[in-house]
Image (cartoon, rainbow, N blue to C red; front, side, top):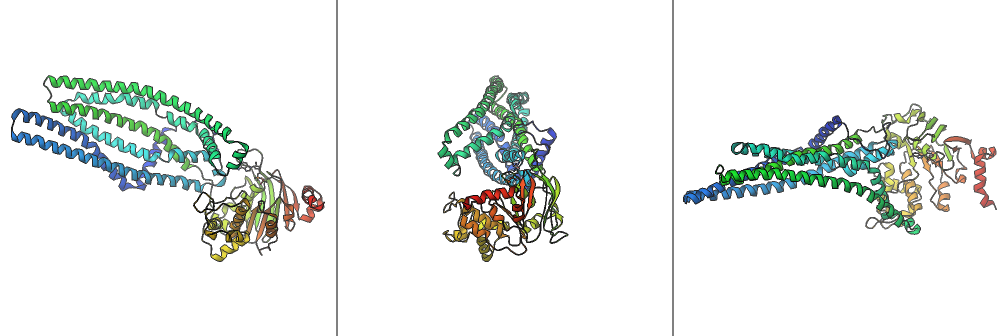
Length: 608
Ligand code: ADP
């Protein structure tokens, strides 16, 4: 992550070496995805390229045949001319079928390639370590890849087909022209140049424009979501935020649109001038053909064919050169896609499933940790040991480092210095699956999965199916039994009103499900609960705290309500990422320090 750039960096065009490698890798993806389909499209493309010049040649034979039949008045010449009509019609019908077939096959390739690339992006996102996926640069690259780059590999292969088609057409047109009017070959090639010069002049502009503006686009999407999102609607309506948010949305739109319009305006003006130059060249060629035909050098059939060939040839040159410049832009985006896929994932998975000192439990040994890009450590030289069966309470004001400590204890962040160990082995050496089987966590904030109740609980065991008894026990541990009983479809109820027959839950009800999730993994011998009762009513909180200890299972409990921690074997008080007090409730009260002060503050309202 050392190469992180500021968010609004203007994206430079990647070096040629990277672009060539990106094009090669795109071909590899295409070859892996649907080789048969791709070859089929290539074959149809060659056919679609050969048919138009062939039809022109047949129409020349037809016209010459008609002229001959008029001249001779013979029945055999008349029949020959009519035969050419049938052949030309047959060729055109075949061209129609081939073109429809191409549209159909390309749509299939588009869908399948789109899926394959989306899978690559999502697989990559799935493999990032927490610190990496939280990095703004990675977030930006992910959004960019999903929004702009996902369709580019397909774009690139389509350009490849365009090149193939134009090249085959050009070769066959060149062969026909070489036999009749060779100098028209040069005119045809020159005629395609103006449009190419225009494309070349602008290639890369759109890429630079959109990559430089991706922070604004993200902001615009966010503002949009604040206005449409149901969770934000309460505050938007009450505080009257809609108009000011929409005002910002419009400002961003106009800002981006102005730049976009200027870019497109320039392209339109220069593009039209160059287009006129191309047409002038074509017109010159046409005049020459007509004059020479009147002079008697070409037959009428030749004239029709040559004019058609010149037009088709110029179009093919344009298509060929256009495909080259278009692929230049596609490759820029594809290069960014591969830059994302090549990023370090920061997850060097260990393989150990047991530690050398069973029973040592979870141990923090002089652990310090700073978030990337921040100077002040979020945790500073933290040491403690959580032995089997022990209950540890964590206290501290907002921002003192409690949640950060939970993330390190679950192995989601690696310490900058010091070590976090389970049974005497650094968490980095543990196989991630083995670690998550040993440690159950209720995170803060927890995720409210807008899936079924069952999914919300089974996500605690990696979506494995829980037996009915295990599901019962998890729900009971999360105090969610009654809540689920009241739902029409029980554990199968879909949560969130966004879905048909979905049910919306309250904050406290969601928290109960999150608690059930943390308890679903019964094999865990360490349970970490970050503010598990913050949204619960007093009765539920009391019921949760009164639950008997599970023998052998240790607990780290974070709670703002200090009375919840009275029975803890040890309480650690954090401030600014450091341990400022540690001991049992009685000992800390006896010390008369920060903990005792806070406890008195919380207890006072009930004393009077
Ligand atoms: P607590 O849980 O005690 O409220 P946290 O562990 O969440 O505190 O935060 C500790 C410090 O780390 C705070 O100063 C906070 O601003 C900072 N912090 C937390 N999460 C991040 C993050 N993802 N990136 C950068 N800084 C963070």
